[in-house]
Image (cartoon, rainbow, N blue to C red; front, side, top):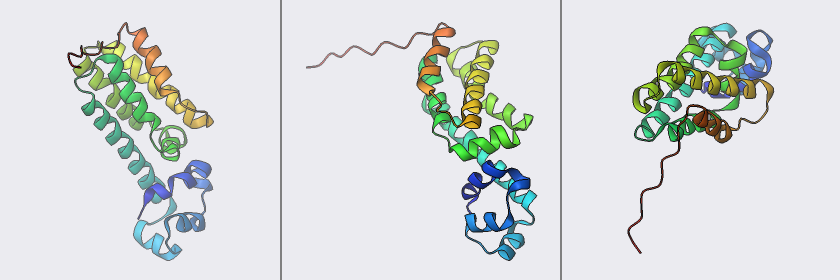
Length: 173
């Protein structure tokens, strides 16, 4: 069953407001099949939230891995752009509708840890950058406003005193 199809329904209505008929339609199942596979609406909501969180974390881990050897500005930008590319409905249920402290803590750590470990930022600075990225993204998800990942990354990089790496000299024709 494709739980990503349910994220827009839960983002609009929350767990209590979503009808089982609407959920069954969204995932392409009959109501009895939905109950048989998942159980109740609350179980379906939890499974959808968990799947959305795991997708967001996977994206952040991949961005951190891809930018492992980049400087702090590029690393911050890679993490910000990855957030910006997350499915908006999934982000809404994780960051706004459900917004559990545990989920928010895991997302914050997925941003801060690589900045501390691989970019040389101190703990407080990496945590502040992670909180700013996550907070701005949550606000954009809640309001429907665009998330300016590049602009925010540039401001944060400047705020931590990091300069973009100069391009390598080109010795060819």
